[in-house]
Image 1 (tube, helix red, strand yellow):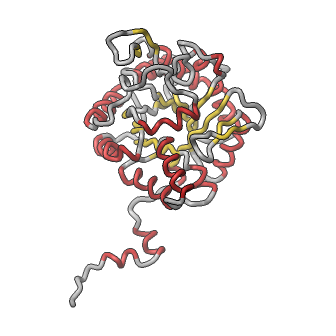
Image 2 (cartoon, rainbow, N blue to C red):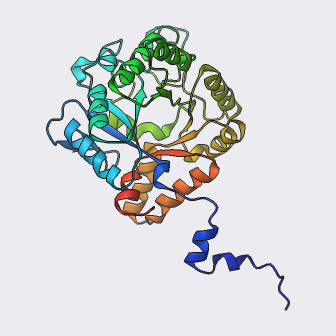
Image 3 (cartoon, one colour):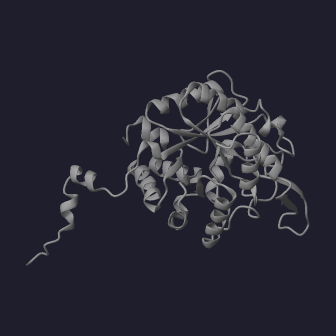
Length: 334
């Protein structure tokens, strides 16, 4: 039997060869860690998040110390989420743009004590009494009897972004999916002298079932209705290109696809279409699903790296992921 002169297995014969010919590599600077600061926690307190195995909500001191630990292992970027006291929430998300809010305090402390790139999630849902990402009013013509108001929400979203910039955020990341919010934020930041603060837009954010563990973590579930009237329909891909195009026009510095694994086709489409840095959010449901399978013995920890490599291979430059501590603290990546 004659063999062809080309033998693909030559490039796979041992680990050293596989390492040098690997097309897609996961590196420490590719990772952005989402960290949750809870206002009610004090000193070095942290509390386990039931929906995210191995993840915690942190007090200011405890969260910053953990961020330092990850930075010492090579983490470059962190995205900050806040959980305010329940009794402070109202219909206009007042704690969200307070100079003494939990996120603003966390940003200032992180900027003072670390050299991390500080990204802040800009949204209203954790801070509103109703749990939606914008202002609401009753409307009998909608599916659930309420309407999430687009234009009326933009000034509040821009106020949140400005307060984060004032606290020292390097990048603000609007996740609300209101039309025109990138332009509103860019205009506000520029008017107030923060023209160098970047915008990482959640450009193609789908109304996904994979967010449920995060909503438990951030106490951000809507109290009535759902978010399908402003987050994208999972069946739509071309629409993602239109959303990204508008964000580019409005002044976004980064684009994002969220979730990542169920939308790798969209990640690739956006990568092929636009030259901006592309972020993919490896969301809570993706994390918890794999962690549960590992706990049950259905998968091994190899599934973690493989899943993240698939996101990079699809075209993402950066990945927001709860897996960052596992990868860094266990020296899985260099």
